[in-house]
Image 1: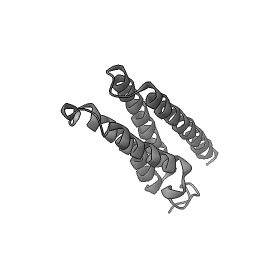
Image 2: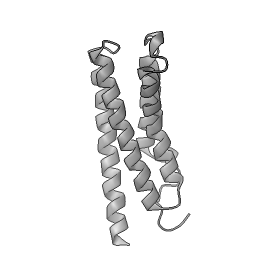
Image 3: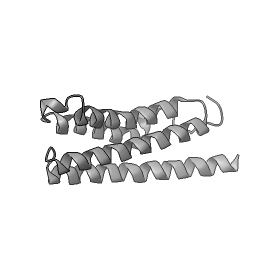
Image 4: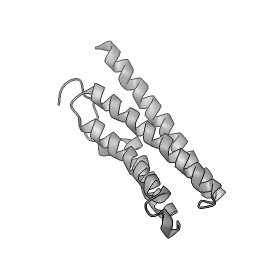
Length: 129
């Protein structure tokens, strides 16, 4: 690794990655009872967005530069926004209960805070170089 990479040795050590994996598995459980006609629609989109969050964190962390990591964290943030939008739609069309919606939204908000904090830290370190 180059000196331009963060000091954590593995993406698996990142709490934000661990929490995003937990969110993805929760989304799989939450969408398990969606109607069959949503198999290639909202269900698939929600699962892809949820899986994209930890996947982009892992890919970005595995790159050889801080700049790449920052880029992939931004992509992960975009996936969080996608998931929130899809969750909103799922709740409005009564596929998701309000209590489940609130629980997942609290989780996504916590993830966004962690991602923003990580991005701020990485950008500050980049400016010092």
